[in-house]
Length: 139
Image 1 (cartoon, rainbow, N blue to C red):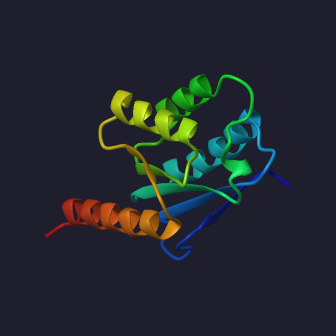
Image 2 (cartoon, rainbow, N blue to C red):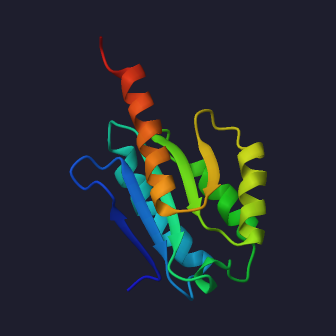
Image 3 (tube, rainbow, N blue to C red):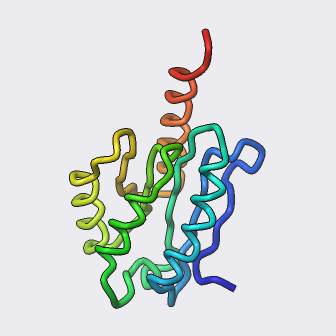
C-alpha cells in the first residue's frame, strides 16, 4: 500500500483529485503516484484540480532528498487539464516552496497555492472548474 492515497472527491465527474499523504512518504512515492494519475488525466477531456493533504502534521514534512527538483519536474509534466494544485495546511517550509513555485510557474493556467483547510480547497477547486467549464462550453 502506498504512503500516498488518491481518490476522486467527486467520483462521478472526476474534476477534483484528492491526494492524501501518510507519514513516511518518500519522493519516490510522490513520483510513482503522480505519473499514472497524470496519464489518467491526460486521457480526460475536462479540467481537474489536485488537492494534496497530509493526515498528520508529521506527514506534511517533506522527506530527505531533492524535493525541489522532484516538484519542479512534476510541475513541468503536469497535464494541461490540471488547473491547480492546492496544498492544504502545509508546514512553513512547504508553504514557502509553494509560494516559490507559484511565482516561478510558467505553465499558463496552472495555479499552485496553499490553503488552510480541505473544505477551502474544494470550494476554490469547484470555482476554478466551473469558471473553466463556462469559458469552454458552447453557448
